[in-house]
Image (cartoon, rainbow, N blue to C red; front, side, top):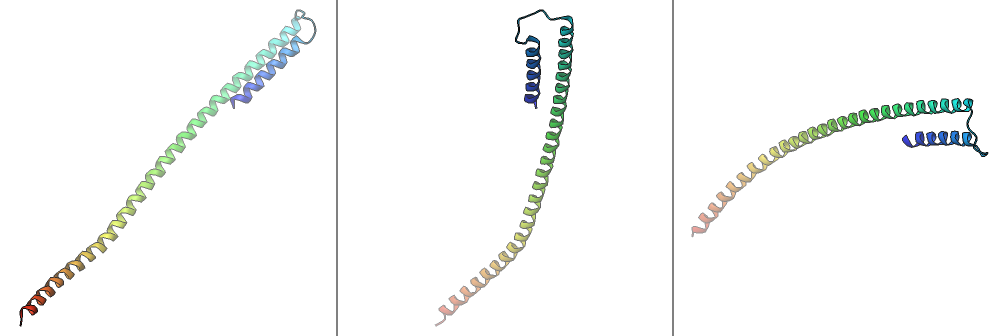
Length: 127
């Protein structure tokens, strides 16, 4: 936004200079011309001040918006982390239930396997 304002200012000042200089021989400016130039300069300074204020206002708004977006991003990341933790806990609880069942079944099978091995040994010892 700075570039168009500066370009406009440069063009207006350039145009004012070209109008005041003209193509003819240099003559001392009249009082009326001097007042006109002074009035144009004052107007240009006012426009420049307004443009500067507008730029500062827009910068402040931009900073506020960036702050709001950063805050929203932080909240979203926190919510994402919360959901991930809940998901991990759900998975752990489901796996724990299945794992407990599997371990219990595995223990029963080992006990049965040991009992069957003992029976096989007894049967092999009998003539």
